[in-house]
Amino acid sequence: MVRALYSALILAGALPHRAAAQFDQVDAIVRDGVRRGVYPGAAVVVGNSGGALFARGYGHFTWNTRSPVPTPDSTLWDIASLTKVVATTAAVALLVDQRKLVLDAPVVRYLPRFTGGERPRVTVRMLLDHTSGLPAGLPPTQRRVAPDSLVAIIYRTPLRRTPGTAEQYSDLNAILLGLIIEQVARRPLDRFVAEAVFAPLGMTSTRFLPPPALRPRIAPTAQWRGIPLAGEVHDRTAGWLGGVAGHAGVFATASDLGRYAHWWLRRGVPLVRPATVDTFILTGSAPRARLLGWESRATREYTPSPYGILLSAQAYGHTGYTGTMIMIDPGRDLYLIFLTNRAFGPRVAKPFAALHQIRARLVDAAVRAVPGACKAEIRPIC
Image 1 (cartoon, rainbow, N blue to C red):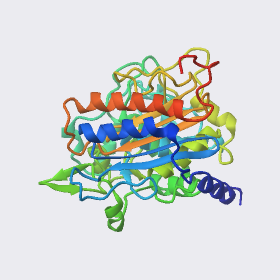
Image 2: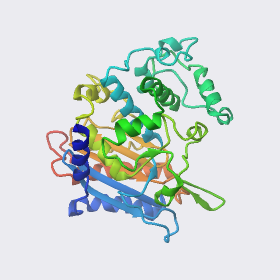
Image 3: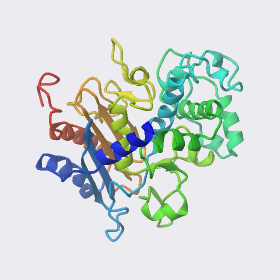
């Protein structure tokens, strides 16, 4: 009953308001990305604890202007590594809150095959904050095997450093978390997150493995011999794992992700206790680049930083290879969803650098646009 009421609340709050003049800069920045050839299409949702304040689609599904125009409510995007926070981190938080999963327990407690060498020292927490010692991913030559064989390769992949000593962003961490979720929840990852996360939050379009009937709604992320491909996960490792993995594979609309961000901004109420959410997002006395599942403003993987300069120290988020981004800032009381298919044949030199610049400008424009977000006591340069 509580979950049904919360779904209704989120659905009502996520209805986009009429775009006000204060969002003109947001509008211009996203359109500039299409004009410059950084991505053919995009969707943006900006909101606060009251719900969505701005939602709009831009460009087209492909560079062909006769292709569909994206919309926040109906267009599905391959969200790539946002899967790590939208599916995997949320599922872990639920299981931790239910006391079915212990953050500081060794991974081998849940995955007995993850043993040998220093692996018994790797904890669930280390998978979440990327201090497990595992490498970033697998070489392409090791990915072209059946899913069970690929999982076996991951189990025996050597650690590159002593667990808990240094950060190394790794898809393997999230893949292992997905396997842990399946063991603890006793059902497949896609089924568990659909039932326990997406449905209660009213994320009615979000899913792994979209069926062929949904492909007309999916913005393509690649093309084969000139034909746009939509509905197949862009990440090759996720593809070899059958399209369902802890690190990639989810397809979602911008409006659905707005509902998800709104839930985190409300500190997990009513699905998870606020104290559990705080465990995942608070940096403690010293800033940390990696929170549990999420990135913080201290992350310095990209130049320029996608966090811009106006977010508060409490901000956290994540980005995805296909051109996706989610940012949440409790200090500013705002969230931003920015989805693109920048992997679909960008027409600009150094497309990643161009995308990072747009992200940073967009984040700052969102801070300036949301009423009350640009508080002088937080950062006077607003």
